[in-house]
Image 1 (cartoon, rainbow, N blue to C red):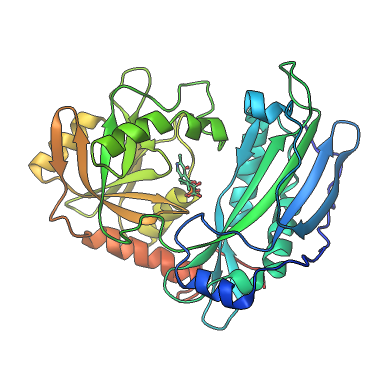
Image 2: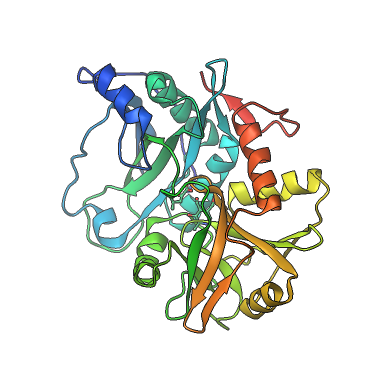
Amino acid sequence: MSATTTALEFPLTASSATVASARRAEILESPGFGRYFTDHMARAVWTSGEGWHDAGVVPYGPLQLDPAAAVLHYAQEIFEGLKAYRHDDGSVWSFRPEANAARFARSAQRLALPELPQEAFLASIAALVRADEAWVPSGGESSLYLRPFMVATESFLGVRPAREVTYLAIASPAGSYFPGGLKPVSIWLSENYTRAALGGTGSAKCGGNYAASLSAQDEASAHGCDQVCFLDSTERRWVEELGGMNLFFVHDDGSILTPELTGTILEGITRSSILQLAADRGHQVTERRVSVDEWREGVASGRITEVFACGTAAVVTPVGRLVSSDGELVHGTGEPGEVTTSIRSALLDLQYGRAEDPHGWMTRLV
Ligand code: PLP
Ligand code: COI
């Protein structure tokens, strides 16, 4: 499905019930992740007859949704995640937003939702951040996490692509995704559940993938782990990704390796940026299938020296332990590794405007 309108604008209807500035300041001091939301949200509506229309930035608030709305029954939904970063001079920037817009369009195709034109996606983000600029934290590694999403709002219980769809973008001040900050996380190897199968929706960013990961995440928590790692659904031996992050392995010669994209893994924007940044720094980078045996043997032999997870929310997070029914594998000393730390800093320096941007990845919003 293609959109019928390309020049959507997002005029502001200002909220008359904004959060008091003292309360906002308190929230920005320690925002956590995904707990607090700003004063406004971006919105646009699509119908099969009219295409995209009714776009704007409106006061943040509950939605009126018919109980028969298709999304509530058949999960026709997609989302994105990106951040707005405040630089030292006060300006606010986003990182590769056009890559999120492109992935959103690919997800829309897979979920039989209408494509939101890339310019409209970018305009919605820019308009929302302009309206809620005061919510962009400064200092440390804080940011304003942006969550664009699209849901099937048509009231109809027949199973077919909805003819009425709503696009929304909300914003949430964010600190570290993991409460421990840079402390290495532990991951549980899911042998009972898989996340995605070939031909399925693994490479789309749709809510259903995350719903399907929650039992495995529960299993991880029951084993004292922070995240779950999924294997391929056919042979149950190839490492895919975590519930909400991609995975990298660092070798003793400084080369880095990440599972290749097979159609079942989400193509992370952080993942592709790290492949480029690491190559820029002279690391050999490889994308290929990685088996869980290679992981175990690599750690045992000392060939694999560091493992890290990456994603917009998690940035670059060291993985300290892999736990499975076979026992536990400990990476390195339990402290963040040298390569992990340097790649993490390179990425953050770029996002926070402390380093040159040779690839033109930053877009100024305010
Ligand atoms: N894999 C999954 C399943 C995710 O949810 C995410 C987070 O968005 C990622 C990988 C990393 O993607 P990105 O770097 O684009 O945030
Ligand atoms: C993100 O990193 O943006 C995600 O969507 C992952 C989610 C676990 C918060």
